[in-house]
Every structure is written in structure tokens, then in C-alpha cells.
Image (cartoon, rainbow, N blue to C red; front, top):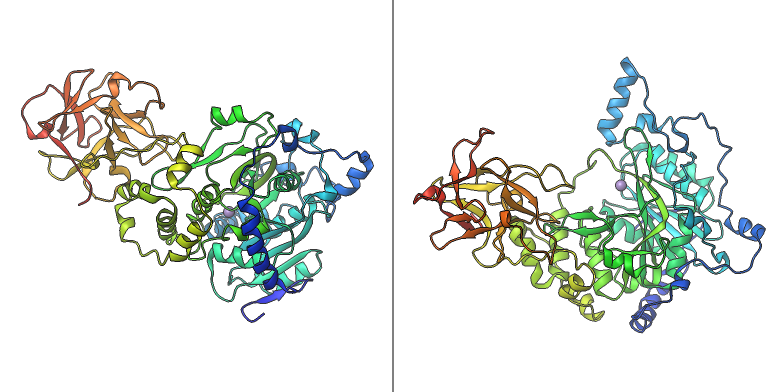
Length: 581
Ligand SMILES: [Mn+2]
């Protein structure tokens, strides 16, 4: 091929023709297949009457793991803490600095290690019709990945995937610079069955690298994995079974954490969490809501999820092409997961997590390379899929309006061609738990004081997963939304709703200062101490204490802050919202 170098055992016969054919046929098929409610029995595994020996034979992986050495480092996902000194300690630290993963340790752990058995025992009871399950191509894109984490991913797929189901692994090199990923990698994989390598001829980014890998895949199903994963025993069958049942289901495994420093496998057999987002278009995790629990009839049933976390999912190849693969106008990574999630749901598919499929993923200490383009990617997602709700996003990220996001004409056309639902439908039917802000004119943005000019309400939550508990302060206004974004609701709440679930201003018990608590759950009445009346004269009157919010120079914590004081006629008790600087 002119655009790329291609290695591995198989060539790509008549591939382009096949893909074009699949797109056209797919369009017809999936439009007829929108009603997918099915009996619960068919959602489970199917036993076909074969003997236990038959099943064992069919389950045989591409390669068997070497015999268990229980004393080996990190075996069975145990944490490792190396006692190092001097030069060795330095090497370890350098490897962490370079990769954001403890690669020094990774190199000492077997590429074939086993993981602890953590799945729900009910999952072991499921039986699969191996002969009739679709086959899969596992697509793994990488950029400058370390040798051991990449190859542990490859071996783990080969050693946990039944030979009969795994068509191939497609490694996509997104134009890496590191030497070990060049000839040494080619040499290494040439001795492995079913592993192919394709190289981009320039830096494409995760999105286009994945589409490149998908374009040469020969399996029925595309399974995308990250390049530092370890698959749990039995991870593949539930994904393929579900897609066989419903070709428009996009199915994610449960993502278990592998610690970047100790390589401990932190699996959990309990109910996994599902994906959501907040109005900054940041991905969030949530517990399975009650309506979804009611819909399922067994703990081994799939769980519908409004969004996916990122790179790990399986999708019918035909359906992936029908849906328009990825938005290839997106750069590097970030935002593509939400875009794809919206598209799946709005265009008639479903996004699900299979509680019986577990894959470990090393979450690096921090992102190892730049995601400068993530903002443009999010804007593309908003512009194509969110209709008027994109304003809620822009209000919270005023600078996103200025971002050059390229041309989305083709993606909007795709939306029209597929007859996709609007974003209102998505919110009401797929993500009813998200709170949709009102954003009434003049009632959101920076909350500014008239006396202390150019000081704004400012709030920093304790961490990414917990919005509540800290004190609200006053800080010079920056006009960037984010931690200075507040909304005044028609229920008289001062909402900090860049996060989901949102926080609400209240009074810290025993003090005169404001703090953030979780807002009430939808449908419940607003607690009295969350109610502030924004009055005609611009004062903010706290009903419960009968006091007014005043800007003061020095709180107990030393910084300027809003505090409750008896109401008087002063500009320090007058407040107003401003959207932008
Ligand atoms: Mn990753």
C-alpha cells in the first residue's frame, strides 16, 4: 500500500470493495433493526448441548500461558514494591518520568503473568456457543509505548482469547520515534501467530490510527484496546455474544485499574460504574441508576451506559462503518469518546458495559503526551450532536467558542443521513439522571460583587470525584468559566454546576461562611439552607439565617470570601452575574 507499510501474515484482498459494500448494506439493515427489546433469556449465554470437553477444546486460547510461578514478581496481580538504592532507584524514577508508568518495574514482571480471579461467580456459569460467535480483530494503536507494557497487552490477548474467536491482533504504530518499536518489534511479532503491524506514515493521533487499523481488519467484530492493558480470563466471549445478539450494541468491558507504580491489579467483582459527563464535557463515572437496575433481570446482564470512558470497546465492523467510524477530523485524543457515545445512542445503537468482561488498564500517573487538541475535539462533538444544549457547554467554557474546530459539514450530513435523534431525546431517554441547567439570561456566569470590584465567587472542589465540602472564596475574576462558573436557579439555589452531580451553595454550620454541598436529588424539595433570594436591589438573602451575603476582605482562612452579615445598604452586599469579561 502506498500510504502505509504493512507487515504480518495476511495481505488485504479486495478490502476497499468490501468496506464500500458493507456500508451500503449496513445502512439498509440497521434501519430495520431499531427495536431491540429482547427476552432476558436471549441476553444470557446459550448452551448448545456440547460436552464439557468440547467446550474446553473450543475455549483454547491462541497460546497457553507458561506454567504458573507463584513466586514471580507481580504474579496474580499482586503489588510490587522494589527496595532499590542508588543507581537502580534513579533508573526507576527516570522510567516513571519518561512514561508516567513504572516501566523499570514492568520490565521485571512476566509478560505472561496471570491476573487474580475477580469476576462475579455467576459469570462463570454462562456458556457460549463458540462455533457461532462472531470472530474479532483486536485493534491496538500505540505511540511511543514502552516495550513491556505493549507486549504484555499483546500476549495477554493471545493467552486469554479463544483461538476460534480471535482473527488477529492489529497493532497500529502512530508514527512512534522510539527505536524498540521499529525493527525489534517487527522481529518479535513475526514469531507470533495472528499479530499484524501497520504503521502510519505521519502522526495521525489515536482516532485516525484506530480507523487505519479498522480498515485492514478481517474479523466480524472490531475490539479496540489501549496499548497498556491486561485481559482477564473470559473477557472476550461476553462482548462477542452480546454483539451477536444485537449487532447495533457497542459493548465495553469493565475497566479494572492496574496501578502505574506497583502493577497491582485492582479488580472488583461488584457492580461496575457507568459513564456520564458534566457540562464542561468531561467524562464522569456514576453508580448504576435505579431505573437501569430495574430493567436488568440478572447481575450478568449488560448495563446501559450514557457514555464510554475511552478506548476499550467492541463493535460489529459492519455497524462501525454504518455509524461513520470515528470523526477523523479529531486530533490526537480527548473528546472522541463522548462524540462516539452520543452518536451511538442518537443514531439507533446502544452503548453497554458487560459486567462479565474485565480488562485491566494502566492509568498513567498523568497523560504522557499533550492533549492540546482535546478542546477542539469536544467542540466538534458539541457542534454536531448537542443542538441548542451546546450553549450550556459554551457558558461553562467561554474560550471554547474561540477554538478553531475545523469543518463539521460531513459529520452533520452523516447525522442527517442516518436519521439520528436530537440531543433532547438523548438526555431524556439515555441520561435522565443528568441535571440540565436552566441558564436563564443574566443568571449564570461569574458572580461578581459591586463593592469589591472585579472579585468573583470562586470554588475549588476537593477532587475530581467529589464536589462537596470546601469553602467558597472570592478571587479576581478570570472570565474562563470553570471554577468561577455559578448559576442561579429558579428554585433560588446558587449552583456550582460545571460538575455532575452539581454542588449548591449553603452555609457552613457553625460559621458565617458559604460552602458547597451536593444539590438536592431531582424531585426532592430544596433544603431551606440552600435557598438564597436574589432580590431586586441585588442583595442575596439567605432565608434560613435571614442574613445577606457580603464580600469581606479576610475570612478565617485569610482570603476574601462571601460571608453572611445582617442586611444593610452597602455595595459589598450587592451581587450580579456576568457571562464573560
Ligand atoms: Mn491508556
